[in-house]
Length: 314
Image (cartoon, rainbow, N blue to C red; front, side):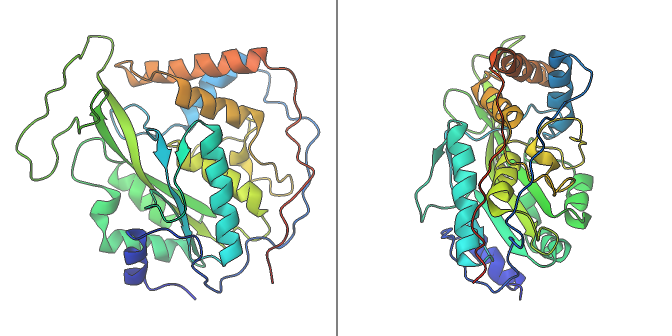
């Protein structure tokens, strides 16, 4: 049973307790996991592979650098069975904390909204139709194109996501673009020829999990996947198959790998980089350089996890 769209819209703006107890199919059907012993990216040098990965997966709004959360996130999950919702919230929160973000306490107002459904496209279409400005606000740098939003609605992917961001002053956090109903243009002080005095903050991400398509995926690894796409503006049409990343979860479900050393290095680099170069591609270069230093100097590790979350099916 699906929550009616209007009721769900109300939930999206309310306190995000993770316990909306809806009788949807469980995410976990088979808790067993298989892990590849060795994963090889390909024949590229490490620095080239990292550059390609960073360039391939990021999908910010047009003419903007990548956006990220500023200090704090609050994760909420609705329309799942209670224990599944809590497991997803906990794992996404763990990923955020590992990236250096503060995580809101239970009852905080969610800016990471994870919604379970049996029909992802119908739910996405209903939400976008009834609240289009929640997905594409009327200011510059808010979101990707209308065509990208159409693909968000129509995709058959098990998980779909949509980020909303806001360009703000780096020092004061005030909007750095003209907002709707405001005739004034903001004045940004400290702008330079090579460096910008603004930053791009994520303010909300909508993540829809089609529980039928995701059946068989371990909840902890699903949480890792959702955490990755919640913290960075990952391009849903990117091909990550040549990289050792959790983004391959649904293309190789028998492997059931969670967040890898590659993913962790990317998130650490993404949230540790300055990201104040005026050119967006230079901001990507800052992330690549940090990620390269981390992976180059890191000792060999095995990302394999022998354990798996218990099946929450009653």
